[in-house]
Length: 564
Image (cartoon, rainbow, N blue to C red; front, side, top):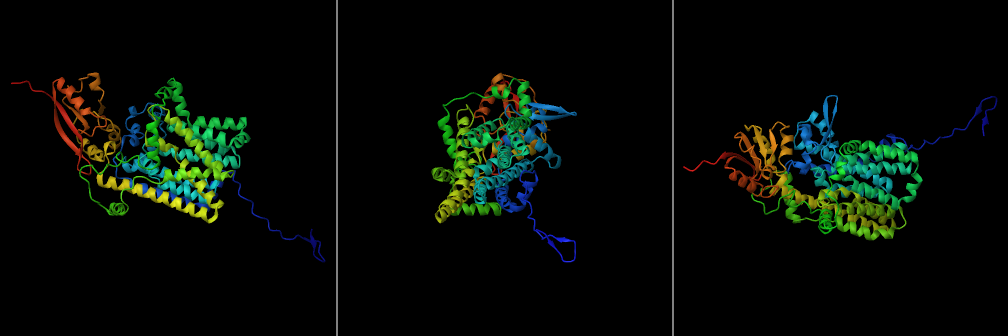
C-alpha cells in the first residue's frame, strides 16, 4: 500500500526496516572470521592455558631423537629416505617409510629466522598444540554448544599426556592432532552447509595427516567407520560422484609425497610393517590405561625419586611446583579415565539426542582406531601411539556432560561442574608431578639434558670422525651443531666385525656411560670386540647433566702394548 500526499503526484512509501541478512556460513574464510570475532576470547583462554603449561615445561628435558628427527635432514640430507630436487634445492619428502617430511618443511621456515635450539624446535609444536585446542573449541561449539566446547577444550588443554607429548612432540603427534581436528571441523561445516571448499579442505587435512605419519590411518579408519555407523544417513545424503571425486583428489593431494614414494619403491610403507598379531593385546591394554590416566611417562620423561643427585628448587616456578607437591603429595594418575567411563555409562540415557550420536561416534572411532594398533605387531605399545586417539575422549566428555546439564537441571549442572573440575584439577596436579620430578631429578635416557653440554664440547673436539656407538645421540647433535660434526653411526660394526675405525687413531668414540645406554650392553660388547682385536680404551672426557651425573663419554682406542 502507498500513501499520496495531498496536492502532489509523489507517492509516499512507508519506511520499512530491512533486516540485515544473516551471515552466509558457506563462504570461506568469512564465516570463520565472523566466528572468531564472536568467540575469540573463549578459545583463546583455553589455548593460552595449554600454552602456559607447555611453556613452563619447555626447558627441562634434553632435545630427544624423535623431536629432532624432522629437523635433521636440513643439515644432513642422508637422514631422510626420499627427497626431491627443486630448482637446485634438495627438498626432503620422506624421513622414513612411514614418516613424511611435512614438519621438516615447517622447520625450514623456522630456521630461516631462528638458530636451532630446544626453543626453536619446541615452540612451533607448542603453537600447533595451542591451535588444536582452539579449533577443538570451535568444533565442539558447532556440534553441540558453547558449554560442551569449554569442557572439551579445558580438559584437553590440561591433560598431561596431551601436554607432554605435544610440547616435546614425542611420536611425533602435534601435526597429527592439529590436522585431525581441522579435518573434522571442515567436514562438520560441510555437513551443515554443503560447500566444495569445506569438503576439499577437510580431506586435504586428512591427506596431509597421512603424509605426516602413515599411522594416521588408525584414527582415520576409526573416523570413517564411525561416520558410516552413526551418521549413515548424512553420509548417503552427501554422497555424489562429484563430492567423491573432490574428496579423493583433495586427500591424494595432501598425501601426494607418500603416494609418490610408494609408487617408486614398490609400496615400501606397507612392506615396512611387521605384520599383525593378537599376542600383544594384553600389554597394550596396560599401556592404554596408563596413558588414559596420565601415568605412562613417569620414569621415562621424568626421572624417578630414586635417581642420584636430586636438586632443590632453583627458581620461582620450581618453588611453586615444590610447594604444590608438598601440599598435594604424589599425584601420578588423573581422573580422565574415570570420567570417560562415567560418561560412557551415561551415554545410553541421552538417546536419541544429537549428544548421544556424537558420543557414540567418539566411542566407535576410538575402539576401531585402538583395535588397529592393538593387533599391529611392534606398534601401539607406547603412549605416543595411544595419544593419537585424542581428543576423542574430550569430545565424549563435552557432549555428554553438557547434554546432562540440559536434561537433568540442577543435578545435571552440578554433575557437569564437579566432573569437569575434578578432571581439570587432577590433570594439573599430575602435570605438576612431572614438572616437580623433572626439576628435582632431571630426565633419564634419551631425554637427558646432558646433550647440550655434549654438543658444546664436541664443537671444539679435534677428530677426523666421531664414531657414535649408541642410539639417541646422532640426530640431536646434528641439529644442535647444524650438521658440522663428522658423526659416524658405528653400532653395527661389532656385529659386522669391521675394524676400519679401530685402526684410525684420530677417531673419537662417543657413547653413553655404563648403565645409561639406550641399547643395554653396548659398551661391554664394544670393549670385548676392541680387546679381542688388540685395542684398549683411553677416556677423553665425560659430559654431565644438570644434576651432575655423567651421561656421555668420549674416548679413543689405542693398541694394547705388547708385554715387555
